[in-house]
Image (cartoon, rainbow, N blue to C red; front, side):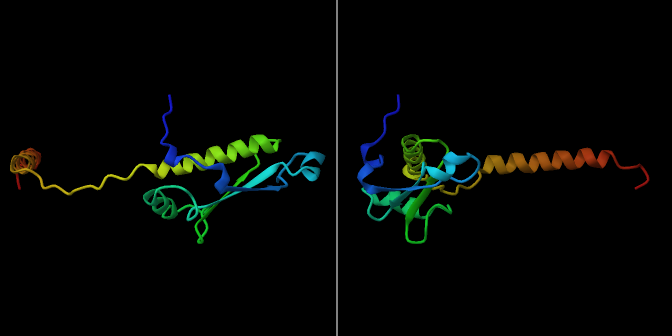
Length: 137
């Protein structure tokens, strides 16, 4: 069961949809019907926590403009309703991807015992290689 934080779910009132014509093959239907949708989601005006907004803006994603607006184009399906659901699902996946705060790595030093083991292994390996040399050296 998927338990999602309500603060991280997409509010439908904050999303702006524009109907556009789909690209690609499709015959007369693609030329007559505007079944594709363009989703626009302003990150600054969103009701997301500030940390999530910052991580979303920092994503190296070409779908996020320099003004901080997420622009998604949904044209996979032949109906606007299915394309709308697809666009909202993709936006939610994008937000879920930055929802968790990254764990900061604290650098550690190797223990004295691990350093000793490493040097012992190096010495052992050097002795093995020395035994492979020809006798005349």
